[in-house]
Structure formats: structure tokens, C-alpha cells
Image (cartoon, one colour):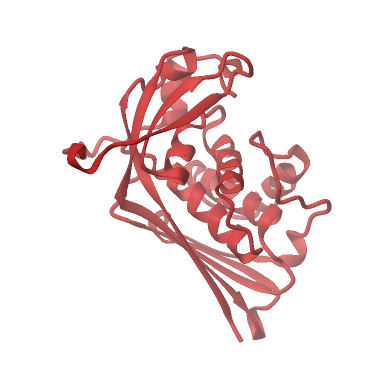
Length: 248
């Protein structure tokens, strides 16, 4: 009998304070609930029971990996927000070297493989499919964060865990792989949704997420236009010379 788990996560728009939030300025953001990334996880049996099959539709990635190559020691689902484990990331990177994809696709696949190694129940066959529903890639609307949150959520759901704090922590971990030094704003917005104020905590240097209550009669309506010009958060931050020590 096949078990199936599903999760989705919205994109986001930063209204004020993009990038400046890491320097102590406030930022205000909202989730884009109609623009989402969906993840589906199937626990398989039969001929596929020794394989992890990954299908990232929007990136054109389809691959199959031996589960025996993905097994790691000392799994711990209850992660605090922070970077990925270096030994697990190195093993994931070695697996990735056997797959021929462009650098951009390799980065996304590396994040997926890492999360699967840390979170996925790998005692049998697994099929993971991820697809975007109207959320454009590289448009500055948090597609990578929604990608990271949806995958973290569906993998944790397969382990019987639905705690948003943990989903957010693992999504941040994936964002580190994708972007190097993320602020944590995008994944928090995608994970918790709604509207929020973000400010840097001077005691620990991390970005704090403070939900904002918007009354129904004060709904915010936004017109968002896709310019079709691709953006890279990692490149943007590097050209603006924001030091990695600025991030929590």
C-alpha cells in the first residue's frame, strides 16, 4: 500500500526594507497565497523500493538515486535554525557530481538531496515531485524559499512532524545551500504566511519575525508585474558587498 504526503508554500513580496533589513532596518513583507510551490511525496514499494526518485518539474530535473547512498548517521529532526551539517553536505555534493546539470540546477538539486538525507524516511522507495503553480522563478517573489519550505514540510510530514518552527529551520538550511547567506526573511514569510515585520535582533544578530494583524476591512491589494528579468539573490548580495557575518 502506497503512502502519500502533500505540502505547499506561498511566495512572498517585500514591501519595504529588502536587503537593508540585514543592516538593522525594518522590513515589511506579505505572503502571496495564490502563487505557490507544491510538493508531493510517495512512499513506494515493488521495483522502486530501493530508489529515491526526484522530479523537479519547473527545472526540468528528473533523477533516481540509490537509497543506500543517501543513508546517514545521527539524524535529528529537531533542528535549530542554522547552516547545514558540513559532513552531510559533502556527501550530498559527492552524489551530485555524478549527475550532469547546469550550476543553477545543481544548486537546487543539492538542496533537495541534502534535505532528503536529513529528513526523508529512507527504509523504502520514495518519489518526490515538486511543481510551481504560477510562482515564477528568479522574479524576486521568494520562489526558492517556497521551494525549500514545501520540500521541508512534505518530508517532515512523512515523519509525522508538522511543527512550523522546524519546517522553517530546515527551509533556512536549504536556503543557505541555495544562496550562501540568506537573511531568513523569505523562508519565514513562506512558512508562516500572512503579513509580518522583520527586524534584526541586536542580541543574537538574527532576523526576528513579528506577525502583523491586518483587519479584513484593511486588506492590502497589490498589483505585481513580472518583468521577465531573472534575478539572483546570491549575486545581488555579493555585488552589494554585504558581509556574510551580517546574517543570522
